[in-house]
Figure 1 (spheres, rainbow, N blue to C red):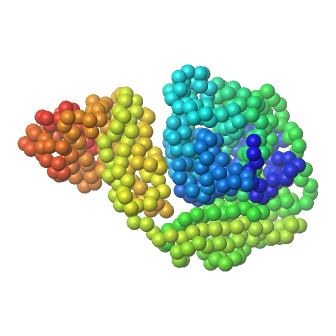
Figure 2 (figure 1 turned 90 degrees about the vertical axis):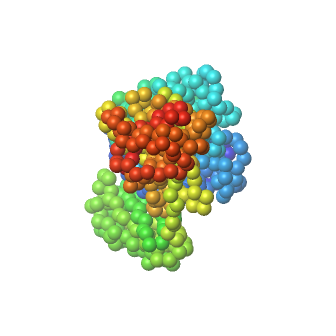
Figure 3 (figure 1 turned 120 degrees about the vertical axis):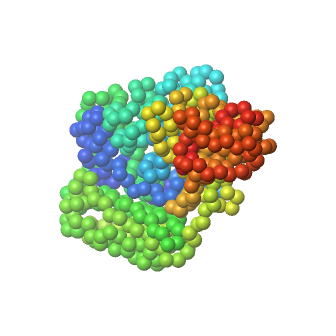
Length: 547
């Protein structure tokens, strides 16, 4: 397997040469749950990647073949080349829907499980668990297979990567259930809620098999170093593969002994942040600011670490403190400072966070800072359209993309109604559709959509109602009939021809309105509430939520 371009700390004498002395010093002697929690305390929290939209900028350091501009895609062998990201998606190898997909959760932009993926393979993979395909295949491009699995944890299908990447994905999943062991998982095909073991037993067996059969590659080691220079944390299962055996495998119950432990002496040692780390604020709208957190963790530091900002655009970057005390940095969890990027003009800005003193022999340590300021965007209102592909337990929410808007992502607000009341949650989508998979037969849903760009969100769209009684594709009926709702109680009718004898009922069955003839785009106003709308020449009633 070819190696990635090596930028930074990788040394030819092995993976341990690049691990900062003392990084894993708290692990020795621990086992099982205590060992996993000690890892959690090391790798979570971490410095967050500031922008999901600009992940391709990071991928150019982490996922490009050496001596080439070809993207290193573990999902397909279609040759695609950087810096263009056309044809690729930013793929959450552990599906974002498993935790709900919200953007304010660190896992959403965690580079340790984000990879570039060819779009068709990504779409086919969906949110299915990893597994061995033994039945009929839905997708097979020679690298990725989706089909009926030997075990799937209850999912309809599984995703099986190529043999050369099975270990990569296994170690990615080990990292995720360790770094986010405090996460409440919405889908538990492979994951288990709770700090230990955090995986279903069938998933443990599968991942250990893949972990052992496909050992750590140079690609993974190099990528681990690049992620460390961005996020200030590492994947420990790449640094020491035996950790998986101590936590889940054939060394369970044994006290962890590092195979080749770095040996910190009594000298002052700053473990994080690493020298040369990049703090990338990506794109920020004019008039707004972005923040990032940086961990300072050391051993045997004496005196304070002195912090300053220097460089061309130093006035754009401020730090929450100009010194970090030795006792705070030497603590087991270290300490954190806040860096704020507040641009005053459109353009790119760079500066350095300079770290000195603390008894360090190396002199100053530099964290590079970068930000880009763009004009504050003005976003058009999204138009939600009727759901499609409605089944007994799922449907696809749809919306129209404003032609001239540049969008980072869409926020879909789903309201789930049943006898227990209403549950409101949000999911994030990159394109103009999203599959919703919790459409139980005792519920009906509504959804609305907002677009987001540089922290600015658009006005909420109209609301679309989805119910099981209306599980047809409106576009394909003889007489399309739909009802849209807007803030302020506005109700708008959409129909291909005049609707006759339109009646509106509240949820008690009481008729609240009757209109003899309704043409397309006809509007009325109703009090907030849930209603059923019928028309004599429409096949099915339409349920709406007025707000």
